[in-house]
Image (cartoon, rainbow, N blue to C red; front, side, top):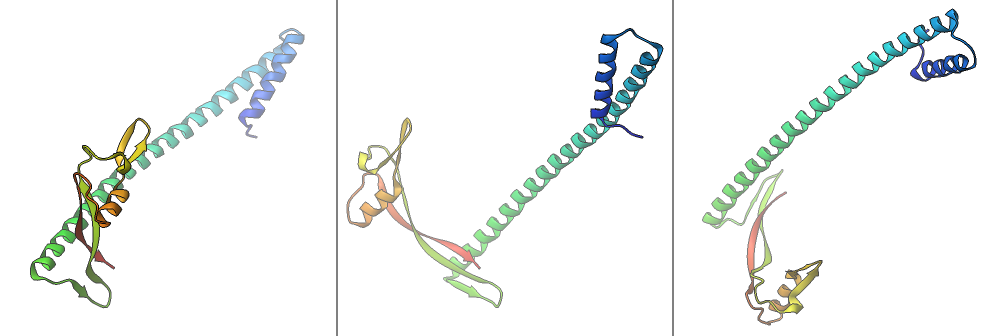
Amino acid sequence: MSKSLYHIEQEYLDLANQLEQGELTAELETALAINQSELQGKAIAYAYVIKDALATVDIIDAEIARLMARKKAEQAKAEKLKETISNAMQFYGITEVKSELVKLSFRKSKQTVGSSEGLDKEFLTVKPESYSPNLTAIKAAIEEGREVKGYQVVEKISLQIK
């Protein structure tokens, strides 16, 4: 019958307790030796399981790295293809391409661009220990007709694939 580490430890504690209360008899000595060998066998089995688990972790880490590299390559490929078709559509003045399964079209958006040097405090967002431009407030002010030093609103288009 196989014993768990808990039972082996309990038996050892019981034997150690008996040893403290009396003298080391031949029976106690034999029981201690068997208990120690059982513990050694279990410990070795645990070590194999631990080594196997750590090897599995290494395999998983390698697979994650491989998949992350593949993901990055696929994203780069998609961006390059998207840029190529976008450039071609713009060159020929085509704003939309449709099929039963996909639709390519351009969407206009406005983006605030500029430099934050010399920017009024009303257009700054307070961050701990620093200031950064509040692009939403800057964009709203420019669209109201106000001039914001160093900033402008530019319209850009981005290709949508649905």
